[in-house]
Amino acid sequence: MVAYVFDTILRRGQTAGYSPSIKRESRNWFRQQAKSMTAANPSRMIRSQTSRLTDKPLIGRMYLFQYDPKTKDKLPYYDRYPLVFPIGSGRTTGFAASGGSFLGINLHYLPLPLRARLMDALYEVANTKELDDTTRLRLSYNILNQASKYRFFKPCIKRYLVSHVKSKFFYIEPTEWEMALFLPLDRFVGANKSRIYADSRNRI
Image (cartoon, rainbow, N blue to C red; front, side, top):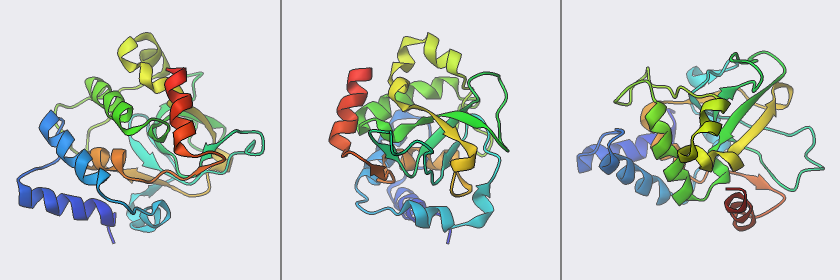
């Protein structure tokens, strides 16, 4: 089954006259629809379509994957199912797809209103004006760090060890970004979301 929850919302959109788009009205509609979905299983989503799975995520695309941190016993909390835009290794412009580590923006660390504001800003570095299969974000740590409009990314930046990724990377299509953004896919360990969101606000 193709990412089941996305299909449900997309069908609703067709009935209501909405299609995925960077336009604000469309973004808001799909976000609210995703927010109303009280159940979403990240493990099931990753297994839902094997053709979407990859070992080599690309910079500026969105992925969901399972993660087990090496230092989890020392962390105050962590997300078992990060929703991430990879931005590279943090040291070079390349990306360590087969080993080492990579930096990613895990959107789950922000409360929904700030998550939306960050995503709105990130569309400014998209390579297309409409959402399609070629859309990606032209991201780097330096770009994000140098512009105040991207300040919400700071609590979201995480380094992931490739050896501790416990699933393949599930590719989320650009037309599904707004839905994934607001779906309850996070699985935090060590703290509840109220504390995590409070810490994120303090970091911003």
